[in-house]
Length: 425
Image (cartoon, rainbow, N blue to C red; front, side, top):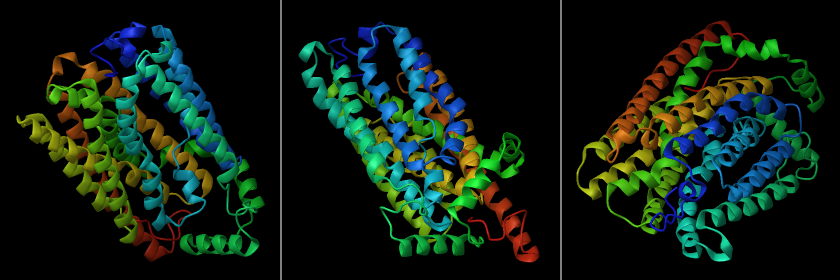
């Protein structure tokens, strides 16, 4: 939204979008995502997950490329909604549970989640370069950005069809029979499940009806996970959408300088995601790392809001990125760890992700550009996000206490419901 702003060649300027219309478009993505996240996750449990992920990537990329043709507000609304429809289900939580043990999931989801801040970092670099070819080929810089992003993503989506394995049982081209048996055994040992074949898994999944899936909503843990995930999603969405605007208001910078200054926070966020998720898996604990990262993020928001020197506020922004980004994959990994079978994992992570995206919806409508009177320092928006991160810390602490009690019951009685092994704390 800040590309070639001095020439008035931003998407908002050229498509005639007001700030309010821009926020509506941003929010429509999350409306669609919330509606279709659970169905998409459940579909992945019934079809080849690799093909479903490839379908998501290809359709999502096509819509991204089409965004270069936006010339009216309703174009923006429609394409943003379709983007949410086609991206729903892309979270890797369910897919990772098919291949990795519970104590290994955090790192894997974290590595996948690195794509978020990485795209922000590379996007800032690409944005700076694309602004230099503004109006070339009768296209504005933002149009070039959408076209380039769409084409690259389509290539990777097509490659996914051929290179991403589906499940350990069906990956005959990727694994030999001995390797498939070893993977199945290590997963069974880690969750203390009885051996099962690919066919029995499919049969069991297909027998799950909507009533049984909705039964996940009765699980108290799911609602705690919803609160836990809801709050960092607000802060992470703020960084994803409004980081250029935040940087622009810190000082007086050109649009190219803003793009380049957005890179370090994303890079630092990437580093912290990798380090903290690996430590979480190594020590087989989620709660304390989420609590620590959330509190660090809160401190960063305070510095960003109340410090006056430009360098101090930028430092605060770095701290925000380093504390906020790791909480997202950790929260989703913890949610997946709390469920036992594939459909439960798919439905639980879908429900939590859907509810949490209401946080993103609130962010796009009510914070930063959605709150004009809060400019230029955005103290109100920053502190709402900071407060949300404190709520995440409190939720993680409550979850840890609750799961500790359940673990004691498992040790005493041998099980809690279908759960026969301890929850990761």
